Each structure stands twice: as C-alpha cells, then as structure tokens.
Image (tube, rainbow, N blue to C red):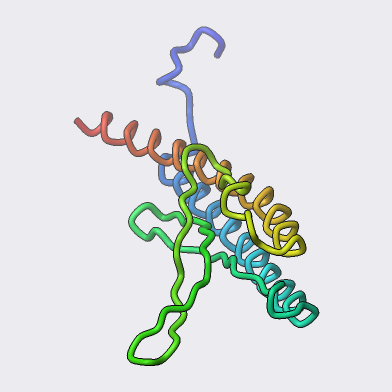
Length: 153
C-alpha cells in the first residue's frame, strides 16, 4: 500500500464534500456573528438609556450577505441625520475597513463616548477573528473550485 501511487488509493472525500463543509462553516460563523451583532445592539440600547444627549452613541454594525460567494461581511457604520424637506432622516455612513481583517478603530472612534468606544473595540476583536476565518474558508473554496475546473479540462 505504501508504494502504490496516490491516484490509485481509494478516497471517499469528494470536492463536493469539501465545498459542503466550507459552506457549513460559513453558516456557523454567520450565526455566531449574528449573535454578536444582536448583542452589540442590545448593549448599545441599554447604554444609551444611561447617557445624556452628548453621550449618545453613533456607531452601528451590520452583517451583509454575499450570495454570489456564499459568504458575508461584517461592517461598521456611523449613524447620522440629514434634513430633507424639513424632516430629519437617518442615514448610515459606512466606514472603510482597509487592508487586513480589522477596522482601524482609532480613527473612527475619535469623539465617540468612552463607553461606546470600549464596546466597539471589544466586539471588533471578535469580528476580526471571524473575518480572518471567513477569508481562509474562501481560499479553501476557491482552491477546490480551481482544482475541480483543472480536472475537467
């Protein structure tokens, strides 16, 4: 068995099995991220009640599905108000993540209340870990799909 060529060895794990596993892991991370995002909003709402008007939070977070790549992104945004036809309307200004898996917190937390900055920093550490894992899973998915395509040509 040791001297037998690798292509003659039985393999029960298929490319489809690996892609199914990757998709299941992405869904697991999506559920984990959803719990963290919900926790952020719950804690933000609770913290808002204890603050005066100048201590109100303005940073939000959301999960955006990427159906084409069977993935998702976790994005921070600043909540703002604009006047339109005499009425104040809420808008979200999305913050740039830049290279890597972490948002540059120092720049967009300037001027934000300390309690909110601490909450964002705590959750961003967990989100960065999820983003890294998703990136690695994406590389596995791409490699398996490239392998599958190369075998078909």
